[in-house]
Length: 455
Image 1 (tube, rainbow, N blue to C red):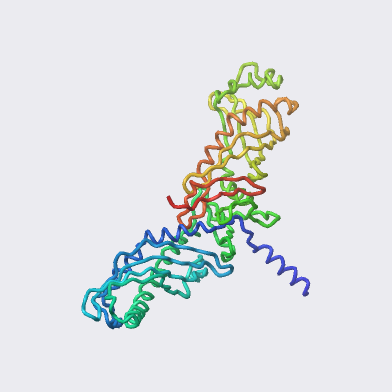
Image 2: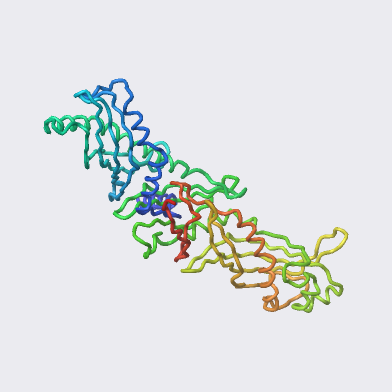
């Protein structure tokens, strides 16, 4: 009985195990997003504007009235990863604090300071999304200059400055860190939103687990959900080995890795769209698509159809498309049937000449347009042809190899490429501009080397 329960439990865990189909590694260049957030939000300027306003419960500072903050310098942000915690942040800036001093004149205090805090990486309980939360905010003075008279007792001045700055700066600057993190966290908001793949279905990037932080990068693992328009989920196949980034990328750089199994699952959404009926007599560089042309490869066709008839070709993909990747090369495997018909006039149904089982590969060329991964294919190789039925008698499939190869390249590949123009959505987070990415085909995966630098 215990053995049965154990096997059942193991089966349940295996069925529900979520293998990551995509990995995102964010290096130190993520700091540009935090710098951008602080610049775009103008939070320091806003905090400075609020500094002189009276707020409920706020006690006045002894020795200074009409407090104002001005001339806030553009902050410089330095980040470092804290393994297992998140990010350590240091914001260097400067400002001028003005007001009426305790000796009656106008006072100016010019300060240069560092704001330090630990940005702990957590998971939002409601949304399940990653979120940063600041802890242990401190303000460290680098330098202080004042226009207070030099003949005043230094101890009196220092005590006054120390008291004033320690009351003003933490309450002014630490909320700025929190506000910037709110701005950054907002840029994760669309991460697990469903994104359409044309009219065929949707893709959602769902976190496999909480992001992890090492000394050099922050890593996010996704178990993407691929659903057909009807709501049916297409399961990712077991890759058979752990998904990981290859070595050789610059330290501190960022990459997105998409597994071959994930791309295979996305292409399953388009399988029906790869089924085509072609009845054009003139296609690209091919000779006229008639029984006369076909008779040049299978002489029996001429006997069955002395007068040329237009050809109609039907291609059906009867197995899910599959993507394979070796370093520098990616292939799309297609298994299906190719059936050729002789057309008849006056609305009569065409007559089947033969039905072939076929397996061929298309070479995939990858590119990015906005937030979509695009594929463009070309024929790599016709791997197999086998005759399933024939109304014109027996013939050797090898006789048709050249004819079918040219037909696939000229007539079928353009149809596939037209379908693939829909593109596959990439993770929507941190305003990443995928147009700047470099693409590397590695073993069983596609790597997008991201450029997160600001212009």
